[in-house]
Image (cartoon, rainbow, N blue to C red; front, side):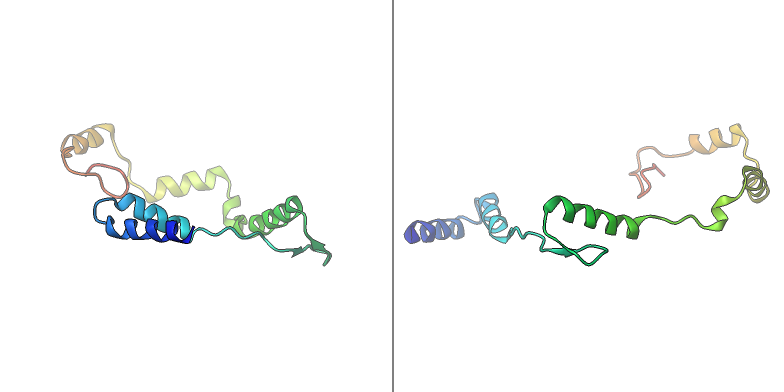
Length: 117
């Protein structure tokens, strides 16, 4: 068994320039480790060892961290939002948009927003 493993490693090292995929597959397989989640303490301080209960505890913990809390500014009425929108931005006509779009060069590559310049 040792000789077979040594032979495999030697052949992978020798052929790494030709057969890169096999080499990196071997290395990737060696790097992967699976570790189980150890016991956790719930809100009452009791130790949880069942996988389903641990998953639920972790779900609650992550949900509390990644949930966005609404700020008082988000409770504005639609009328206030519409007033701000019309006040801050100029009125744009359809023909102005058509003119600008016709001048775009669609042969250029897209930007980070996914739009052509």
